[in-house]
Length: 149
Image (cartoon, rainbow, N blue to C red; front, top):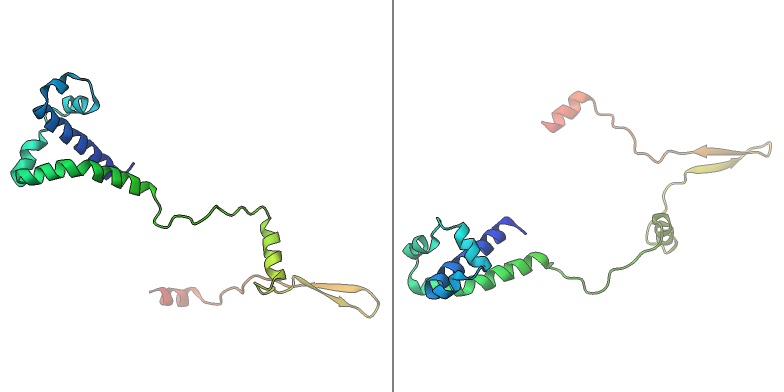
């Protein structure tokens, strides 16, 4: 879970614990999570500092709205913005088979041949191999430095 969402979750639980402790003192004796959290953060009093900046109506609105906000943020963290429309494709062929089929159906162009057979006058076949690597650059170090700066 991301740190901002966890901070929001803890603040929400702490906020609900402090507000319910003021409204229902009989619940304060039960060992529920918000009250254990309240005992842990007993030196921190968010009600006083928050009430200085917000009116009472806004405080009540925020206290009612923050738990759904936290749960919606938590759900949104696990959802993709583009969910899949169907089941995943399972490909059980090797990559070479896939390339071969793509060539067979004309989806890709064939590469240069690895070798060519040349028949000789005496009846033997000579095999000439060709390289498929790209040519080596002919830039000097000075030219390369000049291009990069």
